[in-house]
Amino acid sequence: MKFAILGSGTGSNAEAILKAYRAGRLGNAVPVGIFCDIPGAKILEHGKTYGVPAVQLDPGPFRTKFSPEREAAWAQAIREAGAEWIVLAGFMRVLKAPLLDAFPGKIINLHPSLLPSFPGLDGIGQAWRWGVAVSGCTVHFVNAALDAGTIIDQAVVRREATDTLETFAQKIHEQEHRLLPDVIRRLSMRA
Ligand code: GRF
Image (cartoon, rainbow, N blue to C red; front, side, top):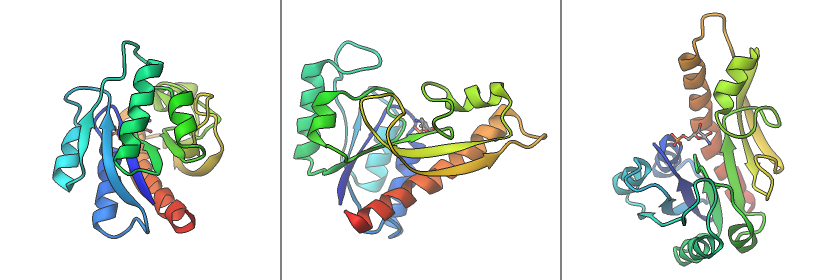
């Protein structure tokens, strides 16, 4: 199962995936490329460290979506890298037909809350401000609706009285770094 990682930021989840691959913990899954929409984003460095080609591509003029032409170009570039699957790891744009149709049922996303609660931006802060006793993270299939595709797996994090937003976020990120590689491994065993 060859897959591409799409991300926009620090890429700590991309790094967790690449570490798992290096350690032989990714089953039959093979990362073939990292694609980023933000020039100079740290995620690009992880490609160098782990020997996986990493490129920044122009997404078009919008902030949270692609232009249709650019999204088609991304789909082509990802295909040309040999990817059959796409893993969204901190990718801050919604996907539409050009990518969804090019990889039907083969795009997954990581979200830092227990969906369907707290979709959209800042899932951790939303849950914190609501005063939840538990939150966590979700890996789900991607469809045209925001953070609403079929859930594959979730991990739960308890908010302790001693937690600050920072420690709460840290615990959620630790679960993300464990859950996402494990879901990729499980998908690769059935793909
Ligand atoms: C993660 O919390 C992920 O759930 C969200 O964006 C964050 C990305 O972090 N979609 P990183 O770039 O992987 O460090």
